[in-house]
Length: 409
Image (cartoon, rainbow, N blue to C red):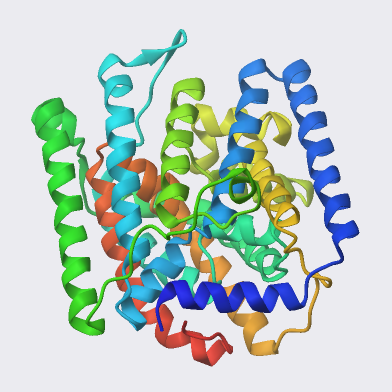
């Protein structure tokens, strides 16, 4: 079954169980009010830039929901059915992000602050961490961005995955120093090693190769290729209520990541906030978090000693969930019941998936957004290593899904 057909069936199922229209409108109003209040609070208490980024990442939450842009489903459809539209859309998104990122990375500063690319060492920690993340995102039924937009969009499994994420992030921060001592060949930036033109050419060549292999595989397994674009006309209603195509979602995510880089000085990330939440909770019960090497770096130590609402990734994550809530309510797709019974096997699997992703993200320098998307966009070779490890992990995770009462579709 094509992934577009699966999405239609999922939409029909949600339609049968959705809330009445009046309740949907109430949630829309609530989401907009929280956006306004959050913007005003951050503008006055943190900084105007922080407040603007709160709205920007809220738009990313809308895009994630309306496009159902899932890294997890992209990998699973590739493995299970040979459908590659999601993977091909990722390559288009990365190519656009490269074009947008490159001038800022060359210049090195914007709006009177330095630009820091997401470039990290290529080594064992990234390979193992991304492999664990790949298993986890199949069991948790969502990656880092997927967990946030599922939670905001009315899927209670996202809460369980998020709890596991927080636990795994804490354990990963405890073991962080050991993993940093494992074999590594260091940081490899393609534009620093090959120059801007050479780096862009190599990254584009990798994307083109993956895109071509995906096309070949899909034709071989299915005798046809699912189109990147659907043929529904674009109008105001569709922009507001969805659904969006994979490519439309990817374009918004690429532009949004560029805006985050330009305004904050670093690319979009998600999961370091989960580690911070875990550290704050651990400190409340007396655990000496400050003694961990992970929390002794200047940036992490500063985050630990300030309010979580001053942490950019925390407010970004909240905004993504709010954006998904807004998108789901505008689409009239919020379910009648947020908390629904789940088999115990699914509960264990989803929690375990979150733990694996939290742990993997810490030792791999990020998740599908911070390490994969932002890494590739920053011309870092570790982003492509993350892709390989997560794909291998997904191969195992897909085999484990039926054990957890999760369907492979």
